[in-house]
Length: 369
Image (tube, rainbow, N blue to C red; front, side, top):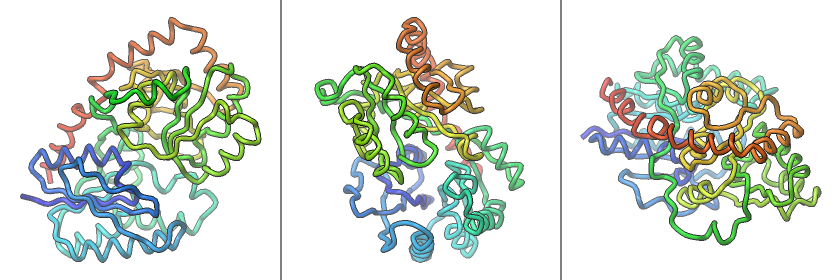
């Protein structure tokens, strides 16, 4: 049985894309180990999986020292493990995998979840961006298999690195939004807008909080996740006296988040145009909202425009101005016919936009190497 070692830099507990991929590879006959990171407040690793999970501890928690330490620890770990395929998720785990696999003459897989060298966090940090771009130029052309989450990203990567990139969309399992308890029904205000994901720069969260001031009192906002802006956003809600209608949930277990999503009235998936990584993105939350039959607000970017033209899953917003957000939300609130049509479209699109549609492509790609 061929063994695949997959590496991510995040906590594996909340990584639904890698759970789907690892589970599918095991069902296809591979032995799989997923290596990630353990945080100070990390929950216990998942036990409901058919693959091995390993989490590395780092003394440094953020910044350059963290990335250096994690990559050194990952390199040492991989040198002490045997694998038939080395699988890197994003650029921040690519170098150790590439070096170890070249030393051992084993094939390499690169899964780009985002355009890492163009993320907003690297803007203005020329030396750091140069280092990551250098790693990309040296490593990506040496991969045996490359894929990413959207067609527009695949086109950009193929042009830049002269390497063929395939597409495996970040779509959910068909059963990920099965309701399990009545907790949301009894404790959550309705109707509510839901944001799920990292609370980071460029995710449109300060603007959404500002927009909540002008929306009817009965509309609430629930924010599920944490990130660099966690403290700042909580302070803004307190200063703006919005604590009665904006609620922070922190990181949520996948099953609980699925339940919350299924009860939402509207999903939020707006990004600032802060570089190519955001502009060419195709977020998993876009499909999570769809699976829950919840229309969503989305950026008027290429992938969302394409999928919305094809399926009609949500409402495209041209900019991040808080007044624009208010107008868009009120449009869906008052135009009942439009909203119900979007709900219906979510149901129709589900067979094309859930994991079975991508799983067969994934297995064939791995068989090719």
